Image (tube, rainbow over all chains, first blue to last red; front, side):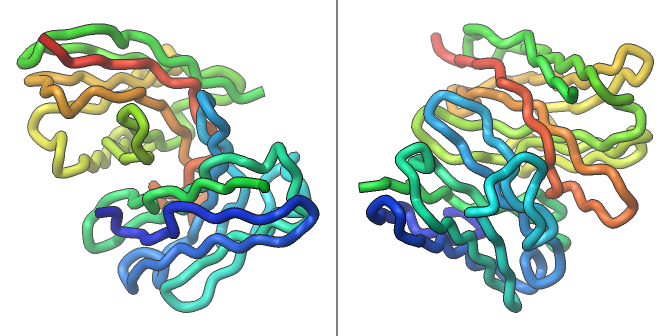
Length: 110
Length: 123
């Protein structure tokens, strides 16, 4: 069981918008920055969003992040086939003294 | 361009030891904190260990505490992970990951990842 909770999978049609949620607690998301990563099959993770809602360099503006309380979300608009990947949220947990990840969400572009 | 290149993975028997290395380029590793993160086959990302820029602070996941040791060699721009008493459940791709710079960054603020090195623990 991951400390941060994400839906295992989401799917949506091309050109539509999808959101991926990440639920945590006051010791992680509630207190520290959330980062989002994209992992294409067989590849290393790549930073998409940092400090809750800032777009990493070179990342498409179709990606956006938000946070409220102990939950965060990643939104992808104008879905394209190449967006099909695994997405992970991550944050530092002050109580566990550990970097905690969500279990990952597999996005399927129909 | 920031690059992280891991090495040292391979097939090892349970109870054995392995030492992973990560060589950094495109930045001065002495100025950055670093993490090791692993991913078992078909599974999600799991944080393993953290070391601060000065090597003064280390943190470990409970699953590896007492068995793994993280260290930095700033003179060689390198990060290491000494893994002892390896178990079958340690089988994974091990990634070296840089923590974003800046006074506000926490260990969870990873901005760059290496391509990973596969460790297989099996008899």
